[in-house]
Image 1 (tube, helix red, strand yellow):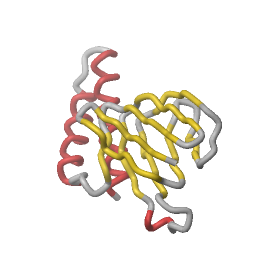
Image 2 (image 1 turned 45 degrees about the horizontal axis):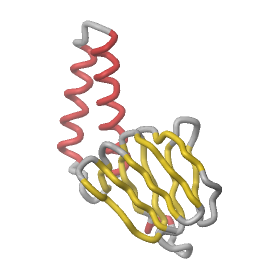
Image 3 (image 1 turned 180 degrees about the vertical axis):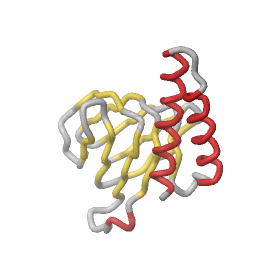
Amino acid sequence: MNLQLVTLSGIAMDEEVYEVIIPTSSCEIAVFPGHEPLLTIAQTGALTVRRERSDIDKQLEFFAINGGVVEIEPERIRILVDEADSSEDIIEAEVEKALALAKKQKSEAKSQVEINKAQDLIDRQAVKLKVAG
């Protein structure tokens, strides 16, 4: 089945894959060829891609995604997100810095809006660290 991973900066992936595990608002779902049509919301989390049926877990690809929309058809998945960072593109030192800054912002927040914004940043950076590892 074809996976199209589209971000604000362009197409991150447009390839044939065997399985995709997507973090959604209700739970993680695994999608295989022939899946029933579905439209759902993606959550901030790790998107997992298995290119071939015979690929072992060491060969899985991971992307840190930041919410979005998922459209599933029997032979195609289209995921539209603000950003999707491949595990190979993430620089851990930069993410750790950003995480520390977000935690500082949260501790210094003066309103619930600022707390929520900082928590979103914390969640995004934590996912990137998880995917990088």
